[in-house]
Length: 87
Image (cartoon, rainbow, N blue to C red; front, side, top):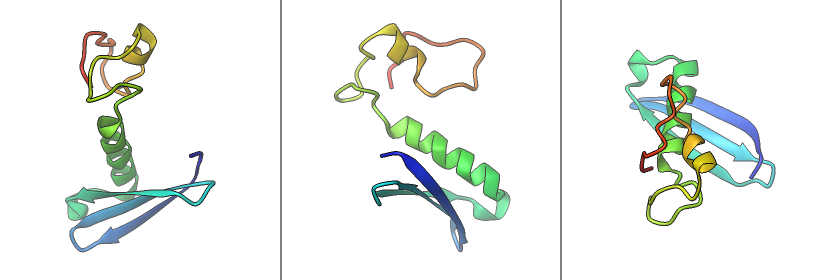
C-alpha cells in the first residue's frame, strides 16, 4: 500500500486519522484526548501508533532479522539507535 491521502477528523472522544492507499485500502487510527491535541499532533501520534503495531518482518514481535531492520524500528525520538530492542 502506497499512502496517497491522510484524512483527519476531530470526533467527540478524540481524533480519527485515516491513512488511505493508492489501491483504496485504508487504515484508521483513533487518537484519544482530542481536546488537548491539535491536528498535526494527532497525525504524529497516529503514525507512532502504527509504528508500534508493526512487527517489521518478524513473527510474534521477535527480534529483528538484521541490524538494518533493528535500526529502522521507527523510534527516531532518541539520539541513539537501540539495536537490542524488541518491537
